[in-house]
Each structure stands twice: as C-alpha cells, then as structure tokens.
Length: 508
Image 1: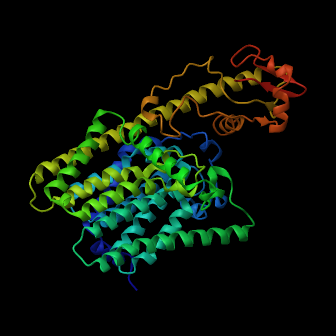
Image 2: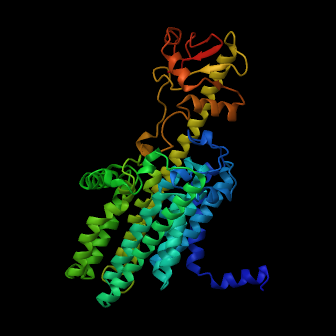
Image 3: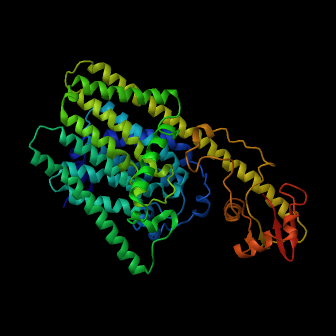
C-alpha cells in the first residue's frame, strides 16, 4: 500500500497539464469574478428560508442533492459553498477540455473562462445554498460525455455519472445532449466506415439511456421507500408525461423559446461588444467551413441540417420533459456551450496550415476574451444590485420593526396579520441594473422580501425580531375586514393597529 505522499506523487505524474490548467483557470477566474457573493451574506427570497436546509428534495426528483450539498454542511456558508462549487466546476472543466481535445493553454483558458463567467452561474450564486451541489451535477455531466468518448465501455460509467447528475439537478441533462450531438457530428466528419461511425455514435445513446433509466429507477425506489410522491412544483410530477400536450404544440413552444432567448434574452449577449464577439465566432465558423472545403461535402450539409433541427430541441429538452416548468436562467446554463463549441471547432479545424489560420485564431481568441470580460462585468453588476437589495431590505425592515414596537398593544410574540408586498407608490424604484439583469433570476428588483414569510425569516435571522404570523386562512378573513382595509400603507401614520389581540400591518 502506498503512503499518502507516494500516492500524491503518482497522481501528480498522471495528471495532464491541460487538466491542471482548466482547474486553475476556473478557480482563479471564478474567484476574481464571483468573490463578492462568496465573502458576503446576501440571501435572496428563497435563501431567507434556507439558512439551514437539509436539501431533501426527493419530491422534486433531486434524490442525490442532499448528499451533494451535505459535503459543505446544510448551513448557508457562502465562502465554503463557493469554494466547493468552484472545485467541482474546475474538475468538470478538466473533463470538458479532455472531451473537446483542447491541448493549448490559451484555448483552455478561453473555454474555461467562458464557462465560469457566464451569467447563469451568477444567478446560481443568488441561490448559493445549493450552488455546490449544482456544480457537482454539472461536473458529473462533463465526466459522463468524456468517459463515453474516451473509453470503449465508457458509456457505462458515463451513464452512472449522468444518473447522479440528474439526481441533483435535472436541467443539466441539456449539457449531455448538446455535447453528445457535438461528439456525433465529429464522428460523422471522420474518415471511417459507416458501421464504425454508427457504433461510436451509439455509445452516446447508450450513455443517455443508462443515465435516464437509472435516474428514474432510483427515484421511484426512494419515493416508494419514503412513502412520497413527486410534487407539482415546477411541473415535476409531469416528468416523462409531456405527451399530455400535443407534440406539435410543445415543439412550437420549444423552438420559439430557443429563438426568443437566444436573440432577446439579454444574457448570451447584452451589448454591442458581446454581440460583435459572437458574430465574429459565427463568421469564423463559416470561413473555416469554406476554406477547408467542408461545404462541398454532402456530409457537412447533412450534419448542418440535422444540427439546425435538433439543437433547439436538445437545448430546451427540459420543456419536453416538463412542459409546465418556469424556465429561468439557472436552467439555461447550457447556452454557453455555443460560444465554447464555436471556439473549439475553429481551433481544431485551423490546427494545420489552412489559409487565414492566424487571422481566424486571433478572431476567436479576441471574441472569447471580450465575452469573458463582458460576462464577468455583467455578473458584478448583478452582485452590486444584490448587495443594494440587502441593504434596502435591512433598512426597510428595521423601520417596520421599530414602528411595530411603538404600536399600542404590541408585545413580543403578538400574532401578526400582514401581506408583505410593498406599496410601490411609497417607495421609488431604485434598481438601476434592470437593463442588464432583467433575465437574471434572483438578481433583479429592489427588495428581498415579497411575502409575509419573507419578512418573518429576514427579521428573525438578520434583526433578531420575532413575527408570529397568523395562518393563511385567518389572514384571508382579516384582509377583507373594514379595519384592515381602512389602514394606510406603510409608512403611513395609521398603517398598524392592534385589533382583537392581533397586530394588523398594511404594507401594500
């Protein structure tokens, strides 16, 4: 048996330089970009109730999430969770560059830089209490496709990786689909027999089938053992039952959503610089195809037609699995694969001495650099607003608590009847970032609190004040009473009143 030092030396000799470069790029650029959210405690509305959360979300289909997040404990510790999330993403990035067969340091930095700065990760950090688990899920997807490509029976281990990834967060299945399609497209362009091409492409299908079947098998076994059923939240109980809607209706919705988010989503590009950078990558792709005479091959046209038809479906696979899902940015991380794969294609196709080789590679490099910078700046604009949301919420709730304690008849623990929505006419809209963060869930708006439960959690955890809310049924009755309707909206003089032993608070 080897000692720890001996084992470490062995790993060091076996670890490729490309893997280390990918890992360190994610760690360094990740810290440079996302450090603000890691060294502060800026909860969003969901995070207010998740300062300690065991992540047992099996009824949402996430049967491995509790284990994945348990490594960093179930407490919301942004720094610890942030570091673990970057470590997991760094390991996944090493698997991704191995899958893409990128060897040069500069291009590894470009690919990993795009991965770690894309605003979908920023939105994930708004829900930082699950960020480490989600990044483990993404890493497992990258290992799934890498193992499938690199090893003869790799689809077996790849399928297991995919199953555990879906057991954490199902949305990253789209990464596996898109990378598998890319792998199949490369196989189609190779010079080999049709039989061997089909054989290699089927490995990706096997990996996907094993992963999905194993995921559902474990899910239903655990649901049975715990005596639970899938929840209706986000249409989870509709998984694999999308046929409740006509297929043509779902397909139209999927393709429309893909086009709308790509063109108008304000995430993949949000200004002229990022727009031009993406255009340069697309033009570079077309120039390479022309200069390499790929456009003269019927195989290339066949691949392009297949990709044009299938990529939107693969990207939005979650809408086929669960048509009623609220499709937010955390579920759209896979869009970053488009610039990544364009960079990888241009690099690999210009590896030999093709015309305009230097120009094409300079274009790809500068485009990637611009996108990385743009995404990093976008992320920090969002973090700036998240910080201000916390500050404004703290100030607002402190004023609210002070008024509560000055109300005649108030005592600690008094039943409280409130809705929670702020009166917009009494408070100006001060979020200056909406033009940038409009689609970055968790980052937009002026306040962290929207419901009575949000107020209760914020005041308890950040102000040390107890709010004993009445039941929803009783609140419904109180809301319709003349006494409640007659109150002013806070901060009006008559916005709070004790009625029959209950503190009425009118904020809306």
